Every structure is written in structure tokens, then in C-alpha cells.
Length: 203
Image 1 (cartoon, rainbow, N blue to C red):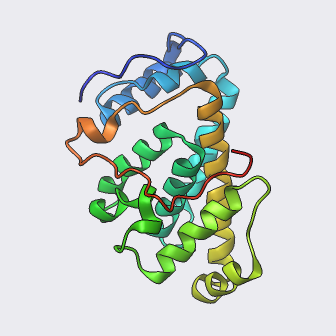
Image 2 (image 1 turned 45 degrees about the horizontal axis):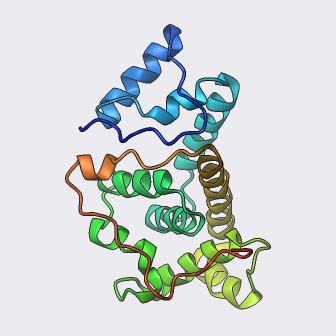
């Protein structure tokens, strides 16, 4: 894979050292072909890094909601908040998850795209509404999702959206931007938000 773009992070990356650091670098190398700068940034506070990684791994193991819907929801949050790192990372992961890459790349312009099913559009709308400040979720949004996903599925989707807000907002605050994972793997560029893109409250 290619080298990472010029650093934009507001905290300089720290050297990743020690036995745990060696394991992290080995895993990152297998997955990305290099060690993401964001890991170096988070290396300043290992407990926070480990907690975030541990929770992220647990989220990945949940199976009450379709993986495709959760990935699209996370990407919708990233696009809304403006986290290019999470947007690129989840698009990159869509290949490993066996998702429809052409559909995944359309998430930033989902309101103007015709590739998504009615349920997928409801999930994307819900993800954006739950991520507004304050949230703009309505009973009318929840009712069809509850019917389609069931209580456990809807709770899982909502928790995934909450985790996406944690990671996306943290990355934006720290200045952590896309490291070009998808581009380096030859994936098509992500679609740009269309004219009907939602605008976060307070913008």
C-alpha cells in the first residue's frame, strides 16, 4: 500500500514501542500494509486506545443486525460529521466484509442515489437523525425499523451509531483524516455528498 498522506493530526504521533506495540504494528501491517498514523496519535494514552479497540471488537461481534446496514450507518455518520478517516476505513473494510463496494461508495450521497433499498434508506436517515445535535429522530422513523429489525436489531443498530459518533467526533477533534486505505487498494473514489445531503444542526 502507499505511504500515508501528510499529517493533519493535532497531536504528533508517538513511537509505538514495547511488546504490545510490536503486536499492534504486526496486526496493522497485515491489515493495512503499514501502521496508521492514528495509532501513533492514540499511543499517547494506551488505556484509551485499548478501551476503544476492545469495544470496537465487541461491536463487530454483534449479530442481531445485518452487517451491511451497520456499515452503511457508520459511513453515514462519518459523512455527516465529516470524518474522512472513518468514511475511508469503513469503505475499505466493505471489501473484506463482502459488501457491495459500488453501493458502499454511494453512502455520502445516499439521498440523491437510487441504489439503496427502502430499508437501507431508512437506516441511513436514522443514522443521520440520531447524530444531529440535538437528535432529530421521530416515531415515524423508528416504527418501520422496529418492524424490520426487531427490538434487538434496532438496539444494535442504535448502539453502532452511538459508537460511530464516538470515533468520528474524536477523530475530527484530533485532526485525524483519511490515510487513503481504499485508494491504496485500488478501490474507486468515494462519491461526494449530493445536493440533498443533510447538514448537521448548528452548522
